[in-house]
Image 1 (cartoon, rainbow, N blue to C red):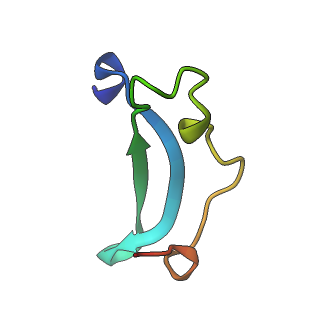
Image 2: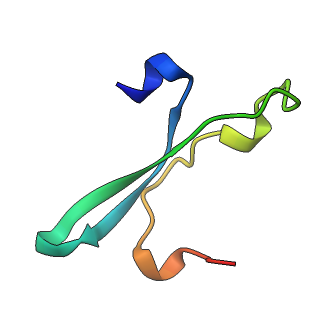
Length: 54
């Protein structure tokens, strides 16, 4: 659904939700990111403890 709005699945977060459900981090490049470097998908899933929140 989100792909039609320009979003890509950037990464999968394992066990993010209760019940061991995984989450998808969906991202969309801003217009000035012509090469779309900000949305290059990660090749492996990550764990919640690997996430950084600023």
